[in-house]
Length: 288
Ligand SMILES: [Zn+2]
Image (cartoon, rainbow, N blue to C red):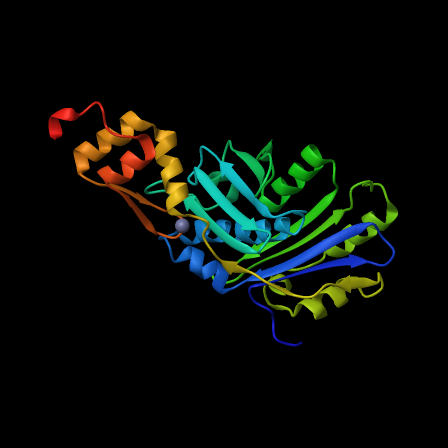
């Protein structure tokens, strides 16, 4: 295969080392997410990196569910969110402060935290949080795996606004950062250049990096933009807001509209819909 793969994730491992890896490149999956809002180029680049990372991290899920990374900060990007499911459908969103001109990673996400949340379709949600203390998102994610999971990890991310890509290498649970095989693979991976990550065919790139290490590629998997919102989830948002607040919005506006920030889908709730959610409105008999 000589064409650079787009919207594709490939996992791989090695014959002689307890290390797993993944490589991903997003094209349409990225531009579909970016088309939902206006993003200044630096924020679009950051969101692209976060989306590529979420796809790579989703490959570590061992069950049906999704994995998200969420950064909250006092910088010009107060919120950065990317999520990818076991089905490799991903979505993302970044909130950008109005009139913000900050372009560097540190300015966009200054004094922030990074949370990784694993949400199984069935069972308990798991979340780990680390402070954002590295000059790039990739380094912050490496910190997360180091501190929260004790899993030595290497992550490289790249994004140019049209394409986003990532490479990840991780010691399998039970392995150690001092293993010479890990050190060797980490050293080889660190040589990958941004333009290679964004454009080189995967097989050629992985062969170039690891041809002496017995790299074994698994079949390609498609990655696409896809939202998980639904009328039921929108209703859950209203339940979280509470009956009193929901009824007050309905009384004021005649109709409650909830718009999904990931895909722009609008969900509407009228008086009858609220009655189904909360029961009859016993507080407002005068309207009959
Ligand atoms: Zn949606």
